[in-house]
Amino acid sequence: MESPDLFSVSPVHGEKFCPKEAVKSCQEQQSSVKRKTAALVLPMRKGPSHADPRVLRQIESEAQAIAVSMRACGAKLAYVAAALGKSESYISLIRAGKRPVPDWFVNPFCHLTGTLLLRQFRDLQTALEVVTARSEVERLAGMLELAA
Image (cartoon, rainbow, N blue to C red; front, side, top):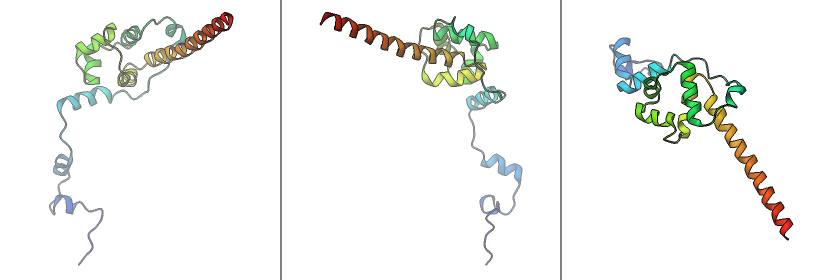
């Protein structure tokens, strides 16, 4: 008895192998949402670039960073919503600052818009919070020393 060829497609597809039929039968069926999302995201080959520090310093909120990023790249609300698999109303609420920006949103959004403005803004706010917390602790410690 011959040993089966490890690279043969016969055990999977039978003796009468047709590549066109095999590809169709082997591929997982995708929903229309998955196909649309892939079609929207796949053309984006280049990764997002850093925003100009002069622009970053003028951003006041995550919502503003989202709105500026979308305007700068020309992305419409419908495009962003479809690419992220969310409703337009949900993305609109995030952009307006009426909903918090979830963590999962940041990286895909930056890739869609081609700018890291939102990520940079979040990182800047985190750094400022750490510095502010330290200075507040030092201020309170100084007050306690004076009172003692």
